[in-house]
Image (spheres, rainbow, N blue to C red):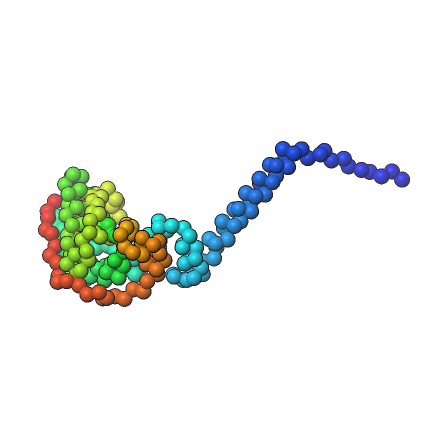
Length: 218
C-alpha cells in the first residue's frame, strides 16, 4: 500500500519573527478592548471610575462636561437683537451657578451665538455681549470670575437651525466645562476622580444677588 505524504516547506526565521509580532499585536488589541467594554451603564460606577483614573485629565474633563450637560440646562436663548437676560434664562443660569459652585476646581467657558440676520462682524460682537451677560450673572450668583474668563463668540457661524430668517434657537449661549484650575489641591495631586464623582446638590454653596443682563442691539 502506498502512503501519501505531504511535504511542508520549512518556516524561515524571518517569517517566524513576523508571526510573533502579529500575535503580540493581537494580544495587545484584546487587552485594550477589555476595559472599554465594561461600562455597566451607570454614571460613577466603579468600573468607569477605575478606567478613567488611568487616562488623564482630558478624559475627566469630558466626564464632568457630560455630567454638567446631563444634570443642568447648558443653553439659554435671547430675544432678537438683544443680550438681555430674560426671566427663564436667569432661572437656568441659577441652576448652572449651583452646579459650578459644587465644583470649584473646574473652569467653564461661555459661547455666544446669534442667528444669521445682520452682518457677520456685528453678530460676532453681539455673541460676545451675550457671553459677557451670562458671565456677569454667574458671578453675581457666587461663581468666581476667574473660572469664567474664557469667553468665546461664535457669532452666526454655528446655527442650530439653518435659516437666514430670525430664529430664536440660534440666538443662544452655551456653557461648557473647559478644564481644571491648575492650583486646586485635588488637581495638583491628580485626584480628578474625587472631583468628577463628587455629589451634586442643587442650591448648595449659596449665591449672590441677581445680576443684570447686558443690553445690546444688532
